[in-house]
Image (cartoon, rainbow, N blue to C red; front, side):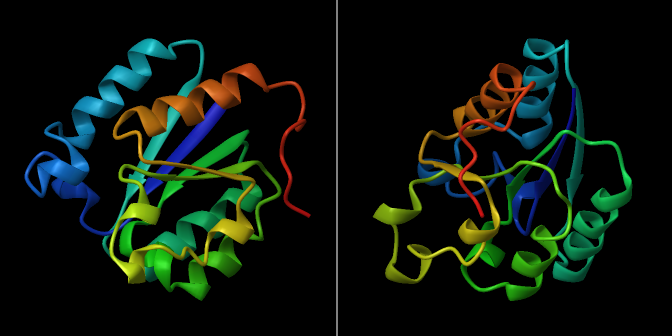
Length: 150
């Protein structure tokens, strides 16, 4: 099973920004642990601070052999209709992930325009949010049972 993780703006600064919300580990460390814990799965990673680059990478999934996408678009989650529309293109399961509980944050962070383009959302569990998404893919690799997007 092959999974792509896409992180958006400022997530390259994990471990160096607002530890109360984002933790103390870099994403490189988080990814290293995910790859060790899910060695039976192939995990690829892409990060960009540029909206258009994220859109392009999502579009490329249409012609690639991935079984799922985990996306944490950071601040773009709250307003990027371009990323929302791109997420509708690849016909694979997609899980939106947030390190912090966006529903307990500032008002402008409580809405994600990406949620309707994804099959599920995991938020508020810190780095474990990524692990929970990976667990879902591992445990449901033979079917799309549980995915609710129409």
